[in-house]
Image (cartoon, rainbow, N blue to C red; front, side):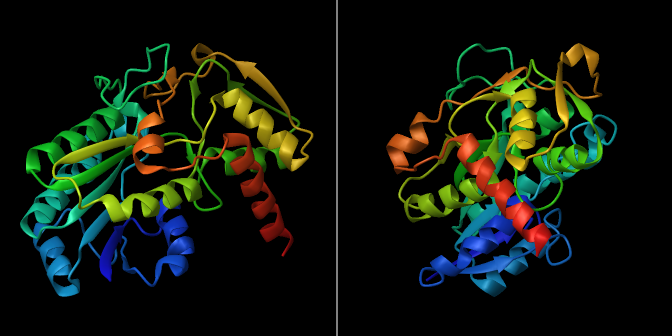
Length: 292
């Protein structure tokens, strides 16, 4: 029985990991923490928690994800996304834990025209992207055993995300404008959670840092995703395609952030659902929960 610490346990990914935990109780004992239970910017608090609970694996699902606010709250974003991750990595090294860290498509420039492999050079264009790229660097420099999983366009039935926003807008407005020239991979947090739990048995077999990419199969623009949400939810709201230049934001978004998913599929045998399939299941669940 291994003890697993999950940070950011009240977020989208953390909540989905909770949902799946029952099926793994014969192998793992999960310890769920958010900022109230564990301050990951406090090195002593991290050490104490790991020792008191004999932690074997840390899944770091905690992050500062307010992409536009990060352009103004630079110090806070770096403290949570880089400095705290460095502390977790150093603690993992000291206590012989394996660290699973969630990173992002924002570490790339978004200027590619083919799917990004895991060894593609990072070139972030936003503060948020830089914080996440530097978190990856901090993990490598720590010397700990780690798995970094980059993901993109995360949504779920939990928290705030694009899919839930579109459902709300679709129920209230006749039309909405959505950018059509940013292309990526929508990712259901529940599918990411399953992938993480699937690779855990292999996390101690290799020293050093392994990087994987994970998103649902297929690609879409934000316009495609919004249109699919309205269709699947049966909402009459019309989605109008617009260009990024017509919807300026403080932080630069990657224009192209499609991942090469081959490594996690071939090395770990992870099966990845098509994005429309996972989206439909999520919308059906959200609508069912709303009725109940």
